[in-house]
Image (cartoon, rainbow, N blue to C red; front, side, top):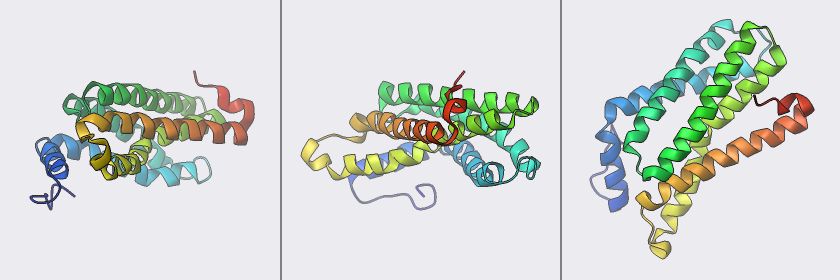
Amino acid sequence: MAFIHPSVTGPPDMVQLDAAFRSHELMTLFHIVPALLFVGVTPFVLLTEDGQHDLAERLMYPVGLIVGLTAYAMSAWAVGGWVERAAVFVFNSLFLYQLAKAFALHRKNDVLRKHVALLRSVAILLGIATTRPVMGIFFATSRLTHLTPKDFFGYAFWIGFSVNTVAVEIWLCARYGHASSDWL
């Protein structure tokens, strides 16, 4: 992790990225720690009987809200500029909308639709993990393309979040049929 073992040597792009994230260390930690907690409770909420892990589910909603709000805040320092900010705005808004929808459906005891909304929110959130291998490809080909992180970060965000969003929709349609078409 760049906070514990910052790069001082190595590829200049990586040193610059580590420095950029270290310069906003507190905000980054306020984003990453709740995100880890959100991902950590997700299996208990989605893979068990409804109501079996009420505490984990009650924790998921406010922690998800913190993740979403800090994602908006962190986009002020987007490495990929406005392209990255746009991706964060679109997919973070979808994440928060589906999370709020799941919360409302939980209060109405609409178990299936709540489960679908939670699956969507989790898949969108995990889109950030999908951006990593995409960025890896951009980094690996940067000698050929001459693209820097400033050039490709935004596109990597769009690709990673889009892949997850489309993949979960395909899976939901196959698994739940028409019940999954309820985006609003």
